[in-house]
Structures are given as C-alpha cells and as structure tokens.
Amino acid sequence: MATFPPLKNDLFLRVARGQPAERVPVWIMRQAGRYLSEFRALREKHNFFEMCQTPALAAEVTLQPIMKFPLDAAIIFSDILVIPQAMGLEVTMEPGVGPVLPHPLKTPEDMSRLTYDGSLEYVYDAIKLTREKLEGRVPLIGFAGAPWTLMSYMIEGGGSKTWSKPKRWLYAHPEESKLLLDKITELTIQYLVNQVRAGAQALQVFESHADFLNRDLFLKYSLPYLARISHEVKKQLGDDAVPMIVFPKGAHYALKELGKLNYDVVGIDWTVDPAVAREQIGPNVTLQGNLDPCALYAPQDKLRDLAQGMVAKFGKQRYIANLGHGIYPDTNPENVRAFIQAVQSA
Ligand code: 1CP
Image 1 (tube, helix red, strand yellow):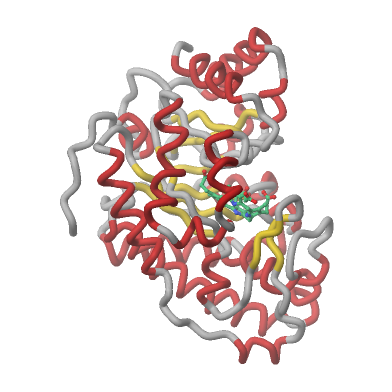
Image 2: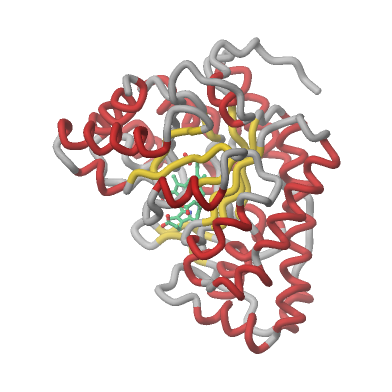
C-alpha cells in the first residue's frame, strides 16, 4: 500500500469506529458538485465522465469543497454508474436530465451482453492523487452504489418516478434478478477493496433506491447483498481496515435489520426521526444524517436552529452530521458554511 501524508483530522474516522468525540464531525453527501461555481466552471469545459476518468480533474473537484469549508471528510469525485459502465453498458450524463443508459437490459437474455473489462483503474488513480493533494487535511471516503440501486439504473435506462421496469424483474424474473444482483455484488466487493488499496480511508455504499422497495422486497433483494458486501470487504481487508457506511435511502421499514448488518455507520435519510433511528438501530452503531437538504433554503438563523436541533436529537457521540440525501444544485454555498458551523459549534 502506498504511503501518504499523515492525517491531521481523524475525527470522522474515530467517530465512525465508535470512539469518543470532542465535537460532532460533518460532511455533506454530494459536497463535490453543481452547487459550487468552481465545479460548474470546470463542468462547462468537460463532460461528466471525462471528469471522473481524468484523475487530475477528479482530484481537483474532490478538493473544491475541502478548500472552501471546514468539512471533516472528503468523498472521491466519481459516480455510482461507473460500475454499469465497466460491465459494458453505455452511460451518458445529460445536463438537466441526469444519467441516460441508451441500451438498458430489457429482458434477462440481455444479461449475456454484460462484460467486465476491469477499466476502473482511473478511479484508483484518482484516489491516489487525491490522497496526495489532500495533504492529510481530512480522510478520503470511497464509495459504490448498492446492487439494487445499480440494477435499477441498468434496467430502467435512466431516472424514473416509479422504477417499474426493474421492479417488474423482481416480480416476473426473481431468479434472474438474483443472478444480476450477484454479479453486481461481486464486482462491487472487488471495486471497494481496490479503492481501499488505492488509499480510500472509509467506504460508503449508496442504496439510494430503497424507497421503491417495501420491507419484503428489501429483505430479499437488498439486505443480503449489502450484508455480503460488508462481510467480504472486511474479510479481504481485515475487520478494522476501514469503517463502512451504508446509506439505504427510504429503508425506514428495516432499521432494526440495518443495525445488525456489520456496517460501522448507518446513514439515515431525512424522513426518519433521529430518536426513532437510534431506538431501532441501537447504541452500538454510529448514525449519520439527516437534515432535509431543503432546510438549506431556510434563512441562516432558522437553519442554525434546525441543524443544532438535529444534533441534540442524535446526541453528540456515535454521530456524524450530514444531510439526509445529496445537496441540491441550487443551494447557496454560504448556507452550506452556516450548516457546518452550526454543527461544529453545537
Ligand atoms: O461529492 C460527492 O458526493 C461525490 C460525488 C458523487 C456521488 C457520491 C456524485 C457526483 N454522484 C454520487 C453518487 C450517486 N450518483 C448516487 C447516490 C447518491 C444519491 O442518492 O444522491 C446516485 C443515485 C447517482 C446517480 C446520478 N448521478 C444522478 C441521478 C440521481 C440524482 O441525484 O439526480 C445524477 C444526476 C448524477 C450526476 C452527478 N453525479 C455527481 C455529480 C456532481 C453529478 C452532476 C453531474 C453534472 O454536472 O451534470
């Protein structure tokens, strides 16, 4: 493993591991992105995946929010859809539309089109370069999409209000769905292990489409794969190598099970009351979340009350402050600063 500059702020890592905290650490999902004019300026010159694939650009974007705000962690600039790309599916990012997969999986027979060309070296190179450029300011988080969330893009072909195409597979082709989830899971395990070998100091798994499952579907098509990922990554790297975070957006129906999943941290979405999350998940897991991203539209004094009210509800130990989903592109960066300050002075 490469050696990197020593870490100056390890608060996020300590709290993720359940150690005592002198204050609450904070980072923001999608902190490297469109709400920053620095990001938009670069994005005008480059297409999205070109930015992901060029380590110097990915490192620059990862560092933009770190240089601007006193955040306690960085997250590598990339996207969850690099895995479907590496499986041979074309993915483009259309401004104002989002991800588009022009040739999605329509029937289970289409799974024969999937390949794995191992073309994710660029992510590992971006992680290495970012660790150097961070100069130990804060830890670097690596990430991946969870299998169900990736499967849903691979079948739907882009964004959706209902995700009925991938859900059709769950009901009409359950065995083939499991095969697809297995295949994504295997690649994801290797991808996450390689990110750590490249220099990632924590890992987050985004199950962003748990909203579209119910408890039964989640227990069948999401939870076992999330469990396999944490189990295998920890088996390959050692139990204490890096803390792992799971963010199952919308899985309010399975909080108890999520607490027993062998992730060090469970991310809570903005719809769940912090007290309910703590009660169901129990005392032995760090919680992360969960301010409504729209709360950043509030006047700053109100935002401060909301952020500090959230900290009071979660409590200051075993807790990492964040939003309850990714930040919106039209958020005022000065309100991001106000949010961070409110948490850090709570
Ligand atoms: O700062 C960071 O968080 C690091 C970079 C990051 C991460 C963690 C990006 C950059 N994307 C993601 C994860 C991601 N991508 C998720 C999981 C988190 C979530 O639920 O928000 C999902 C569902 C995607 C898929 C995706 N990528 C969408 C559709 C969902 C949505 O939020 O609308 C979109 C629009 C993207 C594009 C994207 N990814 C990242 C950025 C900065 C952008 C905007 C691209 C642009 O400039 O057009």
